[in-house]
Image (cartoon, rainbow, N blue to C red):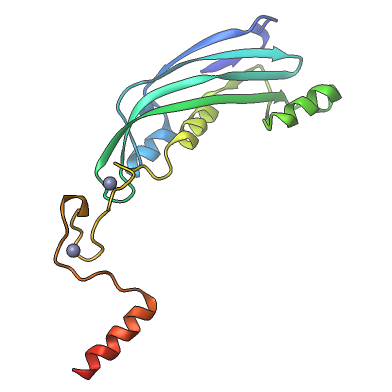
Length: 181
Ligand SMILES: [Zn+2]
Ligand SMILES: [Zn+2]
C-alpha cells in the first residue's frame, strides 16, 4: 500500500484495497488479544488527491467481524464500516502551506501526518483507522443481561441460584449479619 508521490498528477487516483487482516501486524495483535476476528477481507476504495505538498487519502473500507459481547462474551457478528480520511504533508515544506488551506484543514479537524521521501506507506495509518472503527462495547442485544458475577451463568438463558451481587456498603452489612448467627 505504497503511494508514489511523483506519480500523483492533478487528477485523483483510486486505490482498491482488498487485504487480509492477518497480513498486518497491528491487526494481528488485535486478533491475538481476542478483541475481534475478521471474517472476510477488508475491502474498499480510497481516493488519493494531491494538493501542493498535501496528499489527501479519503474513502471507505468495510468487512465483517466477530467480537465477543461485552456483557455475556457470546460472539457477535457485525459489519465494520471504516471511514478513511488521512492527510499527509511533506514534512520539509509544512510551512509552505498557504494560510487559507491550513484554516480549511483545521476546520475539518484532520491532522496532518508528516512524511518525507518519495513514498507514503498507507498500511500503518489504515490499520489504525480500522482499529479505531472497532466497536468499543459490542452487545449481542441491547438488553443483554450478561453473566452472573458469581457462577458465570449466562443470565440471558435464565437466572441462576446465586444471591444478588453485594457491593461496598452492602458487604459490610452482610458481615455484621453473619456475625450475629
Ligand atoms: Zn450478550
Ligand atoms: Zn450465578
